[in-house]
Image 1 (cartoon, rainbow, N blue to C red):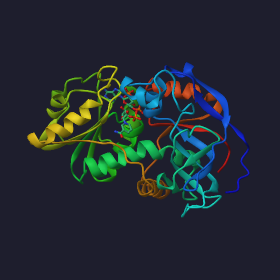
Image 2 (image 1 turned 180 degrees about the vertical axis):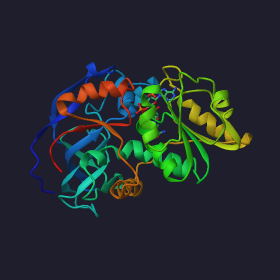
Image 3 (image 1 turned 90 degrees about the vertical axis):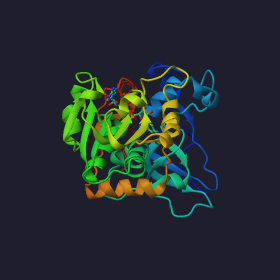
Image 4 (image 1 turned 90 degrees about the horizontal axis):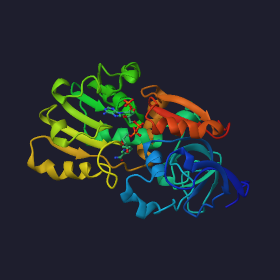
Length: 335
Ligand SMILES: NC(=O)c1ccc[n+]([C@@H]2O[C@H](COP(=O)([O-])OP(=O)(O)OC[C@H]3O[C@@H](n4cnc5c(N)ncnc54)[C@H](OP(=O)(O)O)[C@@H]3O)[C@@H](O)[C@H]2O)c1
């Protein structure tokens, strides 16, 4: 494999667990791709709540895997867009110079090593920043709306967390499927959520009681952390509840991750359909999402594009849930 890549690169690195004070802009060796991998020069990256979870080392249950006191992988990030710099001998379907988006560990750096199965080619008309916003959040949203909720035209759908990264894509995808979408968000994000296609917005602080929300054919939960039996009160008789996740629920060890498991275990015993999402990153879904952006049937709901200098402040805003939709960091002026 030949490459013109330098030996070292700039990266966003993590020194411990906590807030953005554990992050810095540092230098790291440029990684080497194996025979079945691609080396990409990164144009733009997009943090998401998973980035924030790993920054905090939260929930504690993940620390034996990611590193007990400090992360084993110092470079953060997963979702990126960039240009293929070199391809391994066994790689098919990608060539040097291709514009690609996808997921890979240690993505928030000038160069990243990625597996072809988690990459898709970016259409010419789609920007690097739009493409970088998709692989984690829109990928999860697509699997939640299409595969788990199986949203149909005419259904009433409640998206909890509609102002966030996953929720802003779910709102659009459910509306595009012909559903009547209600988004749940804080009051400050109500107009944004309407702009995504929600007919109605519930401010969860002003209307905390599920008895006041109305009844829905589908509820997709990506923020709230309410108990399953409470959410089910807002479901129609044969309704579907999909648990994507929630950041503020549960204790420090599991942080509510057990709710997904409990939903699936309870499902056979109740008339509602209860299910959960565990994103499976793949080229086909990402290519479908990029095509929707190209054709204008999906919008990349980007709140802010920061330069590397502003990256830590942007991640801090994301951790405080102040971002509407997606945040993107531009790492180079590659187009
Ligand atoms: N299962 C999977 O494979 C998978 C994949 C990706 C993400 N997730 C999980 O999905 C969740 C959302 O991820 P994300 O990346 O979209 O996070 P995000 O961008 O931080 O969005 C979360 C949103 O929830 C809103 N929110 C907070 N409390 C709320 C409440 N009680 N009711 C309604 N909205 C509320 C927040 O803003 P406001 O309070 O201002 O409305 C924020 O906009 C996280 O728990 C994440 O871990 C799971």
